[in-house]
Amino acid sequence: MVPGPRHELTAAWVDAHGHCTIHVLHPRPGTVLVRVAGEIDLGTARKLDEVLQSRVGPEADEVVVDLGAVTFFSVAGLNSLLRARLLADTAGARLTIDAERSRAVRRLFALLPAESLSPAR
Image (tube, rainbow, N blue to C red):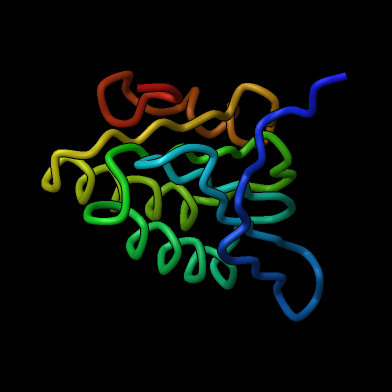
């Protein structure tokens, strides 16, 4: 059996209450995978902001945000993604948001105009 590709874990964060985790991986050169699990609310969205803003641009041509394990997603999290999208557009990078497995994220995205923030780009 051939092992799958290794993803180099470069950062991990767990909030003080254990409600949110953020892992940053590098699945291939030029690509950053930000895997988020748990609750994204006003308190945890600040860390998501920090992680996304520090990874979009010079570090990667593509940033993939995996929100599949998110159980709660507030407007604060949405604002973090919108800021990251603007930063990526300015830097000429690609931001891909994978929200298909998270009902909480899909429900909030369904309220948005299609052009404001599409789940996958």
